[in-house]
Length: 199
Image (cartoon, rainbow, N blue to C red; front, side, top):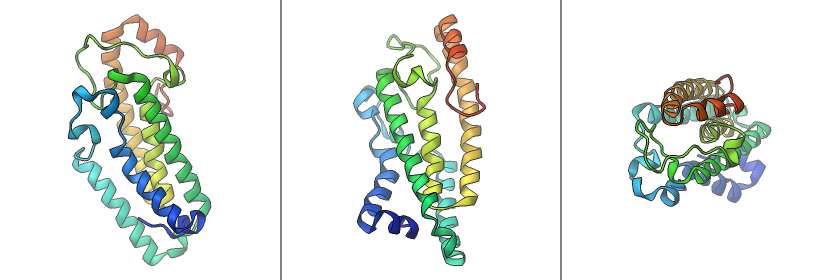
């Protein structure tokens, strides 16, 4: 999707590369292909994630084109698009660092049974946040809506993503406490989750 304000900001060629890479990177450059190849499947790329996922994507496209047609000046805010672009890059970096640091311990699915290969990772970006991959995904997700200058989806994506991550972290951490006991409880006390208002 080409946003005029970002085209002016980055230039046509750079914008095409930037938008294409941002929309494809989150799916196609998934490190599980490198870090966790024994569990690799189409699910690893999140392309068949859920109806809600595709509904959110379609809503963002609809908002973009409706606002571009009726309120074109709303789509010409270069500073907002630049901030969104920086958020998506930052989110992508955090997510990739988290996945690489966790290595074979990383999975897109919440593990309900401890495997022999499971270990509590507290180094690298996990020294800063307990859930850096979720933080990266949240930044990437809301950043895409800033790139598109989509105010409605920005608010909606922010809230729905935060709520989803809050619930997922609660479920995931209940299993992490089962797997690692006091070691995880101590880690949880010392290191923030990375998601605002979720601790």
